[in-house]
Amino acid sequence: MLEHSTFLVRERVKVFASHNTYDIFAGDSDAKDPIGVAEEDLGFLTKLLRWFVSKQLLPTRVEIREKPDDSLVFSISRGIYIFRSRVEVHDAQGNSSGTSRAS
Image (tube, rainbow, N blue to C red; front, side, top):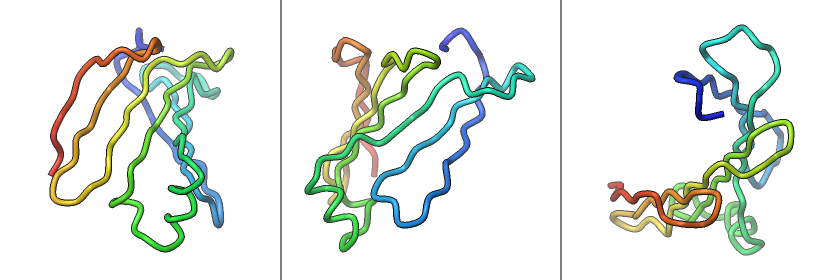
């Protein structure tokens, strides 16, 4: 998946969903099938709190998986947002690949 230089990301529209899912397409080809999927991996408490608290304030983890075997490519996680939050990128083995402070 990472051999492509451009990606098109399309959200799967769902009504009353507790988490978001996105299809990833290669932007540098004319293929109609997605090459991957990005899906939020949330705990039960976070899913429940999303109905009452803004999801921008709650922690989240997004897993990017490659098609057709759904193998994990990398994940992005963000902790609780108060004034600033820390965004972390992890590779498929769970090793930290980088961090950033978001405000």
